[in-house]
Image (cartoon, rainbow, N blue to C red; front, side, top):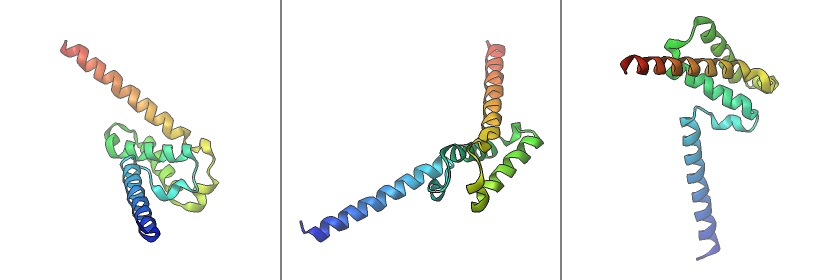
Length: 115
């Protein structure tokens, strides 16, 4: 195989791998472009915030919805996002954990009532 063909195959494989990775990140509610200039905790917090709004919006209070919307607004602005500290996502993690615990308790309560 010629060197040029090998280079072309490697390039095509890299493109396929990048597309597969971007698709997986999108499924996890993570935007691939932000990996370069944003910390891991903030990316995880953004993914949790998008998950909360997409799947659990009925269980959130108005204050929690406003907090999540505010956080997502700050994450959408590149300049503001770069100035955020890693701890800025702790409120999102707290809301996510609180909601998951509440849903787990409710599920256990429903199972006990059926038994």
